[in-house]
Length: 116
Image (cartoon, rainbow, N blue to C red; front, side, top):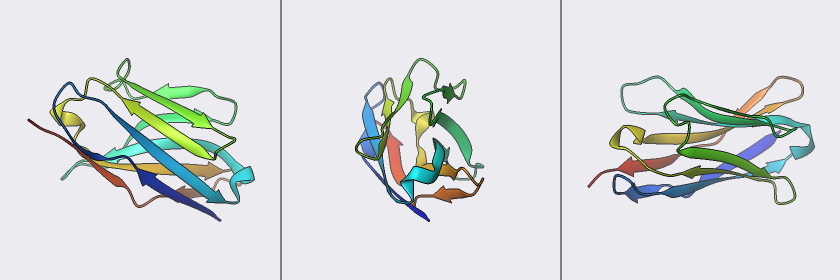
């Protein structure tokens, strides 16, 4: 089992920045990849960014060049640096980890609101 806790969400003006953190605990040695997803009201949950255990990253086209995912294995943390935020980035952001056995775990989410 893996537990994931997100933090860092909040209200920010358009063009601003936020850094989300995801703290992992439990069987962290079994984590293969970690990703950030988001879900806006009325929309399906979508992949924002992911990073593998080897450090390979992947981004949604809508956030390329603005968001950066990184992981600190020593601290069991995964970050999502979000710059140039737009109102359409408003959503609940979820941290998700896929274990080596293929099981996916989710955090409870953190709300990001981009508004003037």
